[in-house]
Length: 431
Image 1 (cartoon, rainbow, N blue to C red):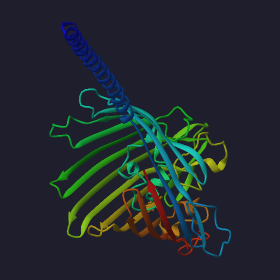
Image 2 (cartoon, rainbow, N blue to C red):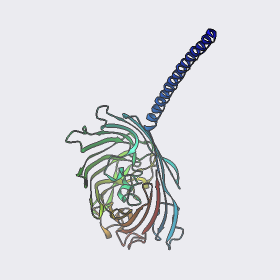
Image 3 (cartoon, rainbow, N blue to C red):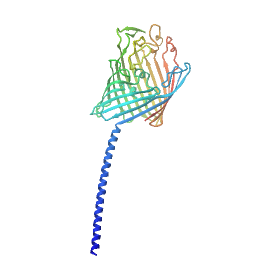
């Protein structure tokens, strides 16, 4: 009997010991699993933090365009019938931007893909001040700090294209250079001000071709009005030069251009713009109303056949047709955008005017011996459009441009208003 009792007590003791040992092993395993899970969470957190610094964005714009016989479209080839209207379909823009921002440093690359080929748009680095993170130094290829519309993304632009003078004077909107941005800390009473100033190559996204640098600067102000409105103002200045590949340049004297012997190849003609811009938006029972206006005036060097700014990675050849002409200009444009209540519809009205030579008008242009041509004729555009936002990613745009040109009996093809109106229907996907 005593032996049996001893055996039973021994078995119970061993069982208790085994249970405690198992519980200890289970606790140790649980602790190991918890530690392993914590390590995995910490690793995932580091990965997420790194990924949050990396951003990819893109948008694609496919469009149909119809133009009258004299029109120039942004997609497809030129008109195959000189006396008939024509239409084209194509990809106007396909852009992908990669950006990495660690809070102080930023690096960005933006690629452009359309029916003309593949190129790049942005390629820059930026360094913010470590104290307020509101001032910054940038270097590379990026938007020029002039006016408001240049920095306004074409994915949000209410018209299919930027204003005529912006397309002519700032091709590709971007330039190669370095820029300093200055802003006060967020708690300062002057936190609504922003100063951008930099030195640029002056020939868009292409490689630099000469020793000169152009200065571009803008002082801007932007502020909200309660929860119902917002306003912005800006003044910009451009001071640079355009390389003259010949020994001759042309300047206005009275109503005609006269030649000026520069004595050597490689002189520069001054390129100077002054710009002002204003924006105002407010909410009402009608929906959001947006008003924008911008104007430029100054001096633009161009060739006989064009008043556009340089946009090439090579210097022009020493040929008579590449001699520079100095022209005083003015250009301006206005936007009126009205959201229709809370609906996805918006109505758009835009007026755009550009006069490449303010010293000459109408029949003064094209006179024999004056060396003036169609390049000196003014042009304007009245645009009417509508937007439909299916959601934050998809937007449908319809826009009609009534184009007008200054007339002169001495310029062939411009004796009357040209037939060059354009209809654009665009579908955009942004993500």
